[in-house]
Length: 225
Image (tube, rainbow, N blue to C red; front, top):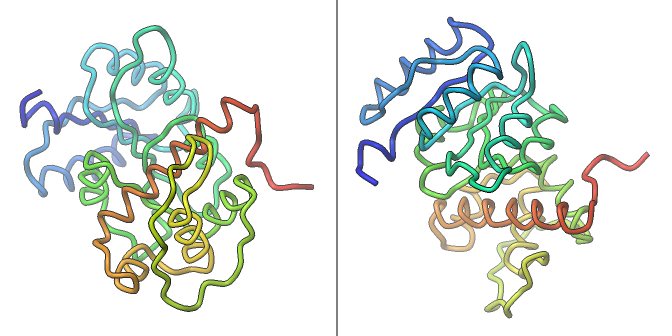
């Protein structure tokens, strides 16, 4: 795959003004080949199969469907597409968790003033990283059966034993605990002496384990009632 093809991106937004803003930000960052945008699930589905872009940036909610519908299209079938998915969301939208557990790779929270810009998160997604929010970290701790104990001091995990595909390593458990109380990836990285990119990649691995766990056990990340 050439350098140009690895930066091909499809934008799926609720309206033309929205995708125009995304397009402007990506083009300002440089090195992106931006496909004609889609404003519906039906159009996005056609363009995905026609172009097989490296990245899809999509609103959570489109006029005729949800981002989770597109993720399922990408990840299903005998020949699933390799397109990575960056979802644009606002706050604690339950549909975001649905998209992540279906196989979305990363998200951009419009309500998080401290979050990296869309172009930066797009590159991070293609590099194997992922963002996370405290409420998602807490939900994942519940999913994996890990007590969300307070993490107030720096912690360097001992070398992890080989964990199964549905289990968290000690380092992954500790990272979720720290993130669940509001620390950011950059904060944790500074405390334990790792690069933020390494911890972002660890978050992506946790998402993958969550996805496999849900498929294998038909589990749910919905809050207990």
